[in-house]
Image (cartoon, rainbow, N blue to C red; front, side):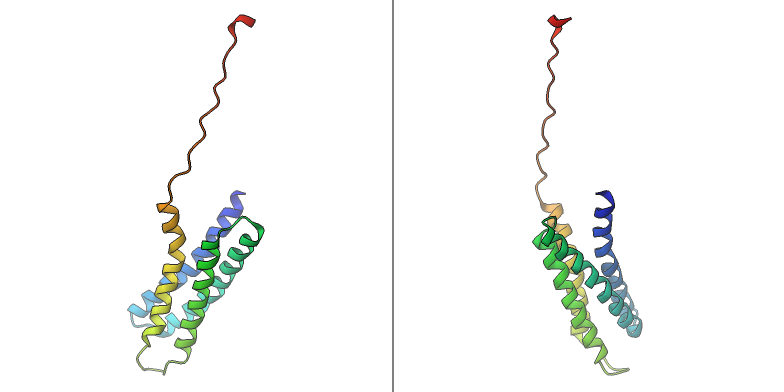
Length: 135
C-alpha cells in the first residue's frame, strides 16, 4: 500500500512541477521552452487523470482528486493549443498563461482540502484489565 500512495502522489507532482517550470520560463521570456514544458505536462496530466479516475472507479479515490486532475488536463491541453497557434515572435496570449495558472491551482486544491479537513478521531487503545486473582 505504501508504494501505491507514492505512485499516486508522484503522478500529480510531475505535471505540477512541469507547469510551474513553464510559468517560470514564461516569466523569464523563454516562451518556446514554456511551450515544450506545457506539452510534457499534458502527458503527465493525462497519466494523473487516468490514475485519479481509475482509483475513483475502484472505490479507493475521491471525486475531488479525479475532477481536479481531469480539469487540469483539460486546461493544459487548451493552453498548449493556444500556445501552438500563437504567432511566432508575437505577444503571448493571456489565455495561454491563465490556463497553466488555473491548472496549477487545480492540482493544489486537493492539498488545501486535505489541510483544512478536520482530523479523524483516533480510537482510544483498548484497556486490558489484569486479573490478579488468577495467579
